[in-house]
Image 1: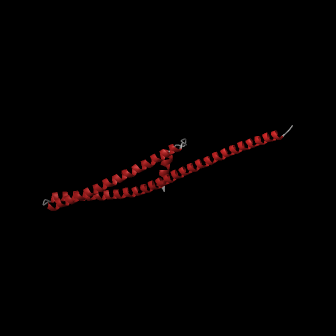
Image 2 (image 1 turned 180 degrees about the vertical axis):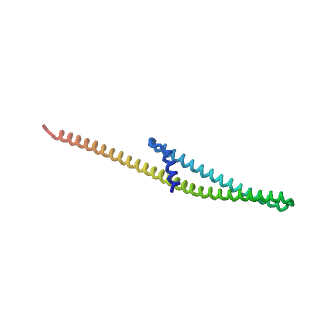
Image 3 (image 1 turned 45 degrees about the vertical axis):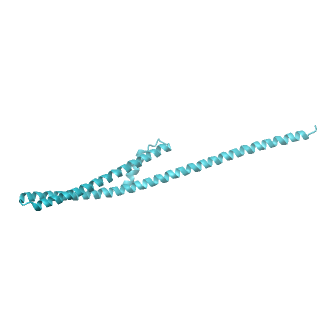
Length: 171
């Protein structure tokens, strides 16, 4: 939950309260979403780099093991064994780091997916509300036009009746 709170704070801090322009808010939200996506892609790249380093450390440990097996001098053999152990320790540390990165990446990806989905739903809702607003405005304008037409028709009808009475009246 704390991750969601932090993301919420970040999004709120990116959106100034004074900016009531919908497109401005939309642009800022899109910018925040893009920044989050860039962070996710950066972590994915780091995970790939860590995977490559794990492979390299494994190969290095294997190489030192082969050297130690071939070496006849005990001092060199111990040196190669120490280097092999060091490479294996580095490999384990890299694997732990990779695991942590993947866990963090999973959480960020979930947050990103949720934010993206909420953003799209909000944008779609705003668009549908704008469409409804335009329809209501059109209906209102049609209603006003109809009232004006009715008033004009009634006025002409009264004028016609008045003219008819004037013609009928013999004085």
